[in-house]
Amino acid sequence: MTTQHHPVDDELVEAAAHVARTRCRGDNHTMAAAARARDGRIVTAVNAYHFTGGPCAELVVIGAAAAQGAYELDTIVAVGDRDRGIVPPCGRCRQVLLDYFPTLKVIVADGDLVRALPVAELLPESYVWADHQLDAD
Figure 1 (cartoon, one colour):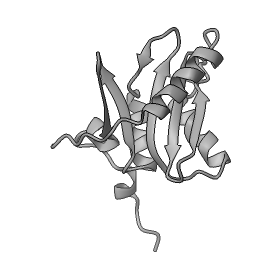
Figure 2 (cartoon, helix red, strand yellow):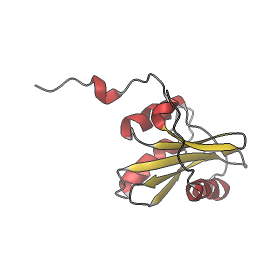
Figure 3 (cartoon, one colour):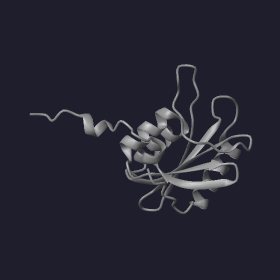
């Protein structure tokens, strides 16, 4: 698989970092996410931690975007509270992001290296839900 690098949306990273600094308080909200809609809008959200497996910030931002009429997302990033920086999506979020937005770019970091990658590259040889649906006859 060839890794495609895309420009990093610094404004999006700062939006998520700002929400992580100002809205993530206590153990229930420890991650913030920001997504850029295809029309340029930025939508932000925080996770809702719960011992039953509450939704990650990336999943909450999908719902927040839809509630605002933004059904097509271009790029997403998650940032941890307490200055933890950019945090890559968990496996469940990677799968959901791929299924909802197969062309989505995800901003990830490895030390000082920050890059935007296609979500499909975060799930090599992935299961694509849409490819396995039975046709209704």
